[in-house]
Amino acid sequence: MAQKDASVNELTKSFENSNAVLLTEYRGLTVAQLKELRNNIRQDAEYAVVKNTLTKIAAKAAGFDTLDDDLKGPSAIAFVHGDFVTTAKALRDFAKANPLLVIKGGVFEGKALTPDEVNTYASLESREVLLAKAAGMMKATMGKAAATIDALREKLETAQAA
Image (cartoon, rainbow, N blue to C red; front, side, top):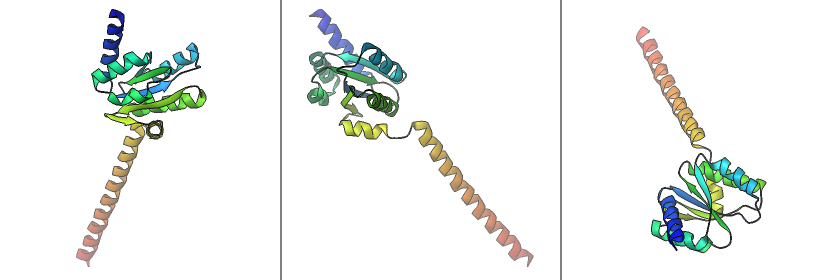
């Protein structure tokens, strides 16, 4: 009983320290494949095989009530502490290469996610790419503004010279 309480406390802390949670089914994956998956997401998330009953208790204690329906069968959770989109992408790519990994859903910003919604997030470009695109758009806009102002200046100079 004490060991179960310790497990629930540890899971509760993992839920509380995560900005998102992704729930998967790992039935049929080898230990080597699970190790590869953990290494793929290590920078942004912690991947743990969990017991459903203890996880339900810990999730409720941490305020993640929406996972109950998906906690059936062999379950593992990615507790995301970094970039959610990067973790979703890594899980999606791993699931494509290893069809035995099934993304069941998750929770992001307090909202329950279906597997399709997780895949939608995974298809977003990375934060760095989006920031680079935004900077490029701002640079182009400023360049156009500078060209317009320069054209006005030239027009005024031509008008004054005449």
